[in-house]
Length: 118
Image 1 (cartoon, rainbow, N blue to C red):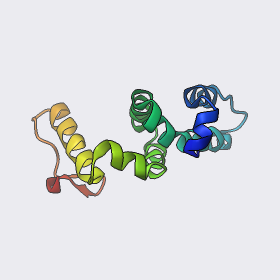
Image 2 (cartoon, helix red, strand yellow):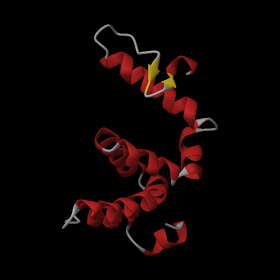
Image 3 (cartoon, helix red, strand yellow):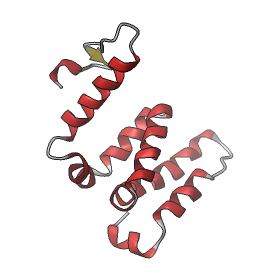
Image 4 (cartoon, rainbow, N blue to C red):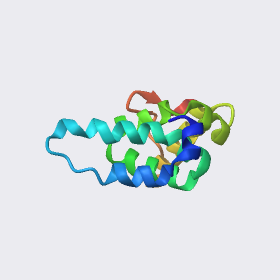
């Protein structure tokens, strides 16, 4: 979604509408998911708390959609996370895994990503 269009509509309202969509068959989920992904950069810019809450909910539920959200918002992410968002996100993920690990240590590799670099 263009930031200019974001001035003409309520991005949070559109997000809520997308979340309320009812589906007649499983393949229809791409429609609201696409809307949410396109809204994400505008939400990050205008209402970061709503955007980050949506990202958290999505990452907990649907990893591929969570990554789509990030892919749609490179400029907004650079503004929010600084010059190296991958390092910032990697560090946060490693800390979260450390906190939730039974032995208090994050694994070296998660889903093929080496966390030791962060």
